Image (cartoon, rainbow, N blue to C red; front, side, top):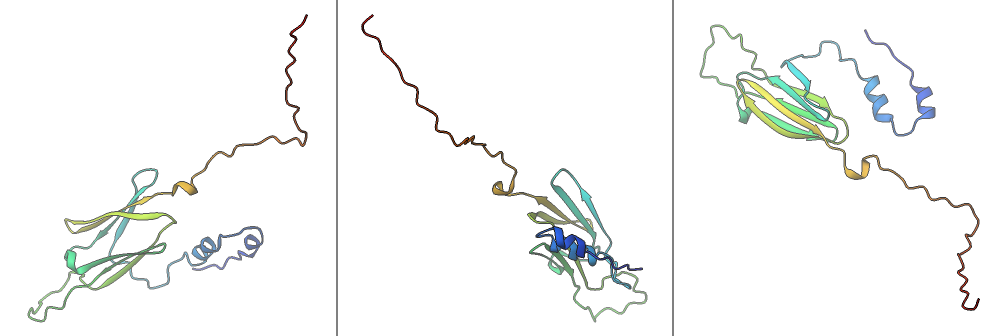
Length: 156
């Protein structure tokens, strides 16, 4: 069930949030979407995250991880083996493409394959120029401050 929301009131009073509104408009997954392979997303700390995909049966050379601007793409594809005749083929080793939207300044720290799980660690690192900083306030009243004069009295 998809409901269309009108974000036009927000466009009138906000600047630079186009990407957020686009994400909200496209938030619901398309019907008949492929939910394979299953995955978890965990928040490990204030700025660290982990994505774990169940990719049993895939080797390191059959998986591709690509980071694009604000997007993480994980692809997997097995080479066809025509030499084997299956009597029952229940393992889901079909090719897949899984995409994850990333926030600004999120980068991949590490990716590893262990026990059939692809573990991708991510970290959000805000550049120094983007971090909050205190601004000094200069009091300018418009009056010139008279310089202090010193009067020396040599004779008294």
